Image 1 (cartoon, rainbow, N blue to C red):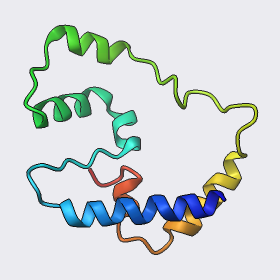
Image 2: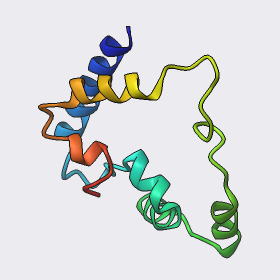
Image 3: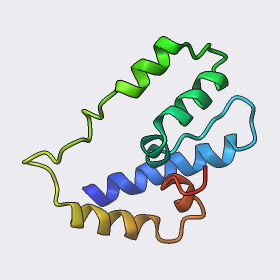
Amino acid sequence: LVISELWRWRYMNEILAEALSGSSRYLLAPYAAVMDERMVWAVKIYAFAGLEMTNTTRAHVAGMQNTLFSKRKPDGLEPDLVAAAVDEVMRNSDWREVFDGRVP
């Protein structure tokens, strides 16, 4: 089930990335890149959306905690199994480095 969901995720994201790449209405924001440089990406996303990045907003972004993925859930999948499944599904993807956040 996990691998089939990963294949679905890959298909949907690659189709969208290929179709929208280069469009002024599309900004690819890879999760890993956003987590590595939250403020840099917050500024990019706000600018992309035409929103003002105020000092108050900067303070909120700086103080944000990752509560969604901060800790492994006790009933979750083993990280090694997930990593192996992702490697298998993304093995031949031209978009792997982009989705991994290595190519912003």
